[in-house]
Image 1 (cartoon, rainbow, N blue to C red):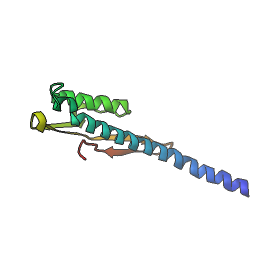
Image 2 (tube, helix red, strand yellow):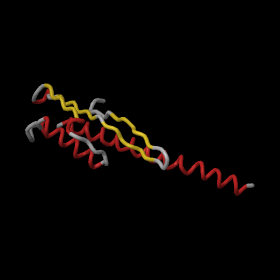
Image 3 (cartoon, one colour):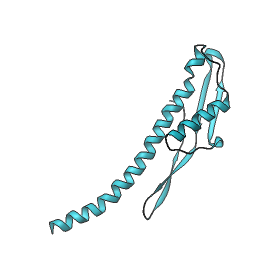
Image 4 (cartoon, rainbow, N blue to C red):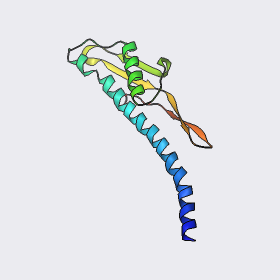
Length: 119
């Protein structure tokens, strides 16, 4: 009876752990992308005069590149870039809108994420 309970418990717990792992990895990748977006939007080098401010296209490409590093596929239309002000008053807002697919053996679903550079 004890072995049967153990096998049944593992049969139930195993898929739950696998599903939780896949969801958690998507959440972690999203959090890492959001942190990278905040770093990109800070534009520290341009604020202190070391380099010229980046264009909207440069910022969009930087977000897409960082997303790719985390296993997130983004298209340019999924990234929003807004710049206001100039020089030391430059404010940059970055946002992305994407879905991550989680595939389990018999079931798959999408998680919707909207990371941004806003705090």
